[in-house]
Image (cartoon, rainbow, N blue to C red; front, top):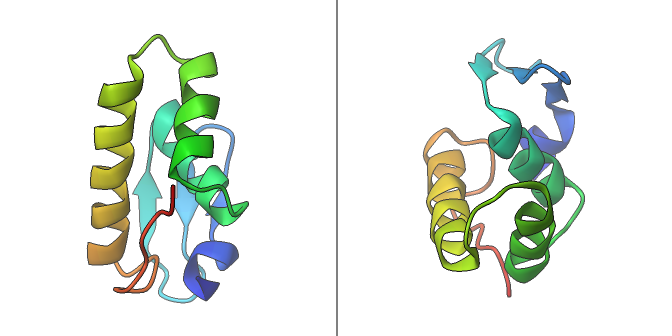
Length: 86
């Protein structure tokens, strides 16, 4: 999780990885997920937090957050063994 902890995440959704120099652009939901994972939130806490901020059903949020975690693993921003816990 060191990579995720080192990311610079701007309020506008610009994400910079100082280790590799890679940059990413995320929307408000993506930023909220990144920050929630970095803060140690589990799946259910993330879904609850997101459902308060965005008008999306919890089942959709749960699926999308799990998919986003998969992408983070692929981009090596979290370890390959990373799983969101309930």
